Amino acid sequence: MTPELHLQNHVATITLRRPDVANRLAPEDLPIIISHVEKINASDDVRVLVLRSEGKYFCSGYDISEVQNSQEKGSSFGEMVDAIEQCRAVTIAVVHGGVYGGATDMALACDFRVGANGAEMFMPAARLGLHFYQAGLERYVTRLGLDTAKRLFLTCERLAADEMKACGFLTHLVQPDALETTVTTLTDTLSAMAPLPLFGMKKHLNLIARGQHDADAIARDVFKTVHSDDLKEGGTAWREKRKPVFKGR
Image (cartoon, rainbow, N blue to C red; front, top):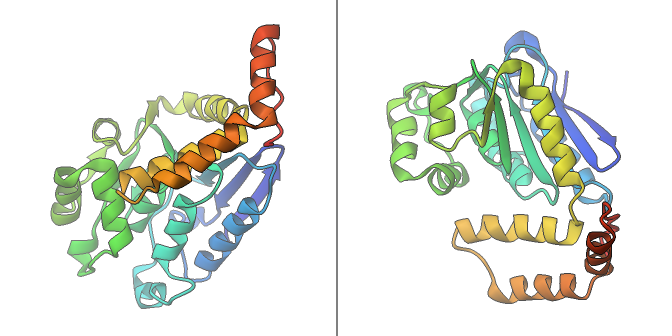
């Protein structure tokens, strides 16, 4: 079954639904995920995207027998992952069980990666004879560091959950029975933030990490928040000791 999109309040959820093959991604899944992200980007109401999966594993990556079909412009695996990274909403990957191959890059493209003990990861590209695409290499280096990227790409070493947390692959690591509570708490926290700075700072932080930021664009977004209704609401709510109600204006 293809990935499913669910929208509720300020939260979108994309669920991978092939548990019988460890949620392996097929060619038809890539444009569908891109389309889901485009729908999220077009919704002013969505502030958080949660990427999760059914069954025992998060995702076993892309079907290696179809790898030649993952390079077509407009529906390539790399473009799908870039779409997740560039999603306007803040993104959370819920990592349980194994995360392998291209799925590791898909998780890295998310802003937060909440994992449970018992998870593991590995990147078998070199063992399979595949050179990974540029954007994925860049994500590994900018988010995990050059030495860790070399360790994972060149040796195909498996990492257990504690090592995934230590190297920065996971932003949160909890016991399996605390996974959903942790994700819900993080989702609630993020969805309560003012949209303009939430979206703007997410975008610019990612660009800063890649050395592609635009000082003028950052200044424009700062100016927009300084003159926003939400900043006034935030100040009023602070003084009145209540939760702010942000409108994204």
